[in-house]
Image 1: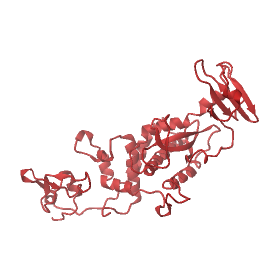
Image 2: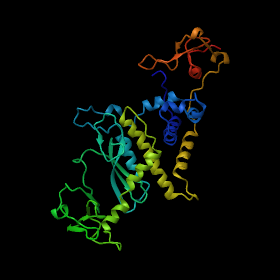
Image 3: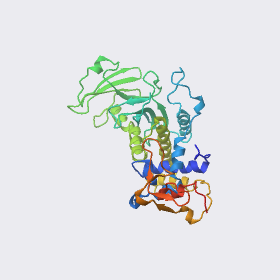
Image 4: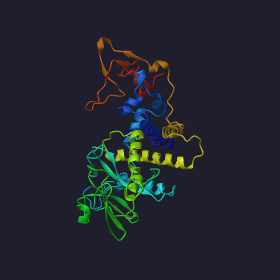
Length: 373
């Protein structure tokens, strides 16, 4: 592209600042962040940090893998996650460097919403988004800190981890008939054990369906309230992934993208910020501790503090920037924002006073062809 120039470190920081700030300031489309036609809707910060065209160019050519090494879909070694796997692997390696997790951790599924055509797309009717790319996520139960993320590759590719585990069990899974056909009451759960594996059927209250659970971490003991310890331990430690998803929904800034893998990349950037805030909470001496919103705002300020290295333009006389209106309501294609593609043609009733090309008033600052003084 003629408008492309090499990306600098400062520009990349400014780009990330805009991505994170879009999660705080929600608008219907990327273009709206740079729209200043209505003063009540203007967001001048985005213009100061980077131009709209530059941001869209960086987003268009953003890659986190070596494109030349990607194999075609028909190849036996084809990996549908190859476009973002280097970033995901780097994140997983770094996440474990900065924390020693507590004993209680949880593994659960999370869905990055997308309706784009992709072989990784899953349909989960219980999720709000229903369609998306499914990840397995390992989190610290107490804080929601993400320890590992893995793309779901089907039931035959997900190994059973070792360690002390507990979780719910579907009725159609292999299990003893005593547990499958059990009709427990709230005061009388049914237990069976084989080695370290404890299987239980529990009913929370009359009228509810029984819940079947497996555990290698608990025995058939009850709390003073009569509730089984296996149920209490599950409810206490299993909600970290759902809590993380709720936070991402509030600050994640999900936006439509024609390429699902690129949406995953931006999603992973927001996951990094999520972990950064938890590390800040664990290690800060600030009183009071900053809120998550304030923490992200300060990240945005820090990244955008070094302004993008825009090339300095030659100073021109004010007359070179002036435009005039065409007579008789005539129109010309704007030489800056118009193109001949379908739906891309934009007409202007004003022209440049020197080159006589069609030019919107809002596009004067981007007009590079007219160099007269």
